[in-house]
Image (cartoon, rainbow, N blue to C red):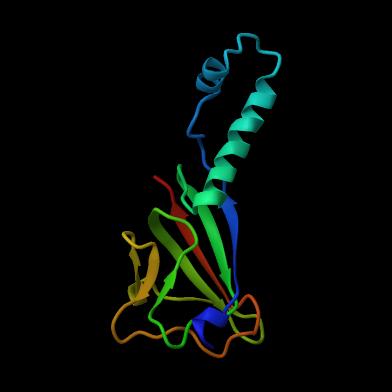
Length: 144
């Protein structure tokens, strides 16, 4: 399977613990003094962060993602992750045709934090004999 033919998806596994802008900062910039709309302000902060991340592909605060892939690239030894800056890779899981989960040994790959890639170490190979759809999940943390 060629990498350009492989479909990917991205979901948030763990939301960030803190937003990049506090409620107090947002209210100060908007010149809001009362507490009546605090829940609304909080929602605007989250919506603005998510839109920025969607538009830029960059994550402003540490967030854990699951990137689902339909297969692993036969001709490449790396997978570009869909958010940067990459902090770490927690796991690489694959699912065979019988839906049995396997975890790729951490010694088989490394996190290229400069280019936001999952890279195989020399002599290692991607899992094979996998189901056709959602064959793998890469869990990683991105954010700055």
